[in-house]
Image (tube, rainbow, N blue to C red):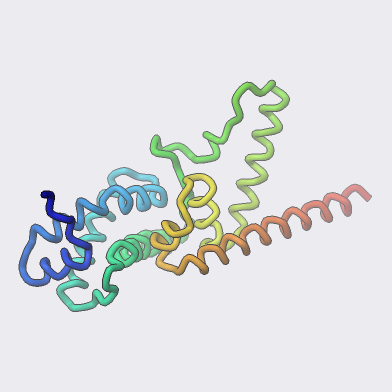
Length: 197
């Protein structure tokens, strides 16, 4: 009979008692999700790899210092570390993160509709540019939720884990983002009416 997998918490406890292999298992278990989330923000394969390694190094230091208190919540805890490293990086560069595809291209370059005429294609491009402008005007936290949810199909649970907030906070940020986009659209329409007079 196959032995049941150890929980993250059990692996953490084994690591703290001296079992280095236990931490390696944690790293393997969570690598794909953490690396993907980092890559979505930093847009660079090598930088993402650096941040991924830095995330686990920081996690080791915090575990050894007794700073891990979230029993059975290892992944959200380590996702917060990864997210904070990325946000610190962007704060230093004084720019907001965008989101790119696995090929390194801007996500908006891949939001195309099949079988469209030249006119329809032009309209789609104009709509995408308008949408991009609107999303770019949102506060950083709201923009991040919109991009992760709609363009990369993260669940709200995954968004919450990656950004280090509760699901309700992630949902709230999405709600405020939608309201913000609606408000921006209304302001643009009013401006167009004023200019037309």
